[in-house]
Image 1 (cartoon, helix red, strand yellow):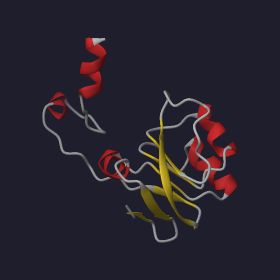
Image 2 (cartoon, rainbow, N blue to C red; image 1 turned 45 degrees about the vertical axis):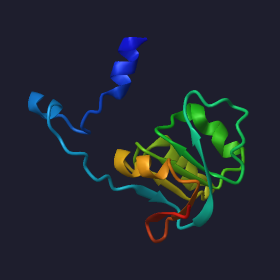
Image 3 (cartoon, rainbow, N blue to C red; image 1 turned 30 degrees about the vertical axis):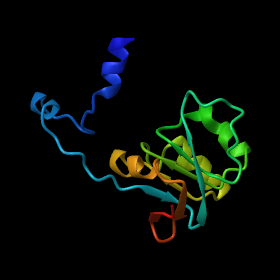
Image 4 (cartoon, one colour; image 1 turned 90 degrees about the horizontal axis):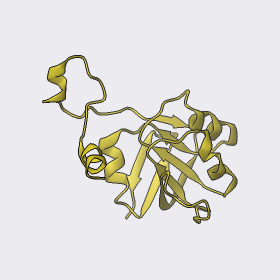
Length: 135
């Protein structure tokens, strides 16, 4: 358990070109992939692999680090937006959000995601390529 805690605390760069990159690096600014041209302002709910399937996500913007096809259940529960830390325009969740016309920001990066997860309400404006903390 102690080893797991240590590995969870380690922060690594997004790209490793040499051994030196492990000792000194700067978090890069990620460019999110915005899906749809929709805009939504709603409360957030944070999801992870540990989130129970019964969690109420209806009417909320879901924040999730990374989502594989096992998180498709989110789309059946009335979410109004999706934001992921990792992923890109061709990721499974981006494609699913596009199919449903759901406003989404995929791959916002660690820096922005950490700031967003402390919010209670977000304004996700995909047409303007903007995410704003309301409160």
